[in-house]
Image (cartoon, rainbow over all chains, first blue to last red; front, side, top):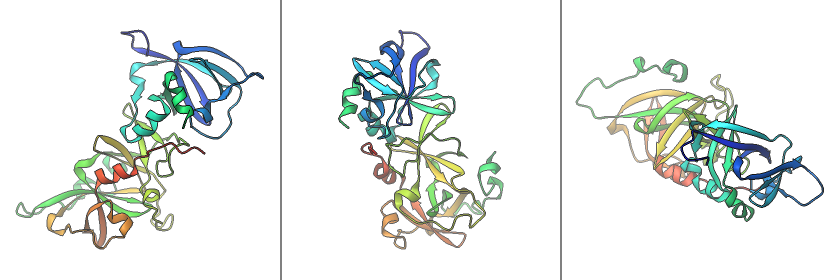
Length: 122
Length: 173
């Protein structure tokens, strides 16, 4: 997820539909304030929740996603990322969840930016 | 540490008095659905249930994920999955969901939400019988029934249970 041989991951962490999500920072093209232009609600888009998110816009892999206001860029040691549990493998694969990372006392889903169109069909 | 999470400390367990009697070790734990048992070999650890992260797209019997020893472990609420009403809250002075029985089978690791863990018991193999006395919904996921401390306890067939309880699709609210 980062340069070969590195022992950390730089992730953009946001909240969508009440769930923490994270993207590889290198794939996030822009973070901006919400405005009137069209954006896709990240929570609904990813099938996470029907609750509306609002506040910030993330441009990721050509899609503009609406997320909750607090967006952070954080660096995690490689050991902080956990593979997706096999018990939830089918659901997580369909949502494009690559791994899970602990963010303070919560867990965030690390999403595959290239799987966003897959998530939209859920 | 064991005394913190187990109702019976290992030293007090009724271990086999004779080498001539075949015995099976089971972990007996209490859920909102009552007492259940598992082959002890399938239990990785028993711990205090920490802060869980709920994921709204998962079904109700998977109330969230916890982080344990560097890995994400999904929670499984057996009472919700089996759709069983439990004994009255606090009937034994217990708090709901205060223990986690971490189990593994078929390449899947989950944490079974438990009110308390009664302990590890070595019971005579001859006491294990076909689960005929159990309700149909529970029987589907059991390999046996056994009497323990005067109660009939279902012995779960963990691989069958986990395959059935595994979520297949996201719930979109």
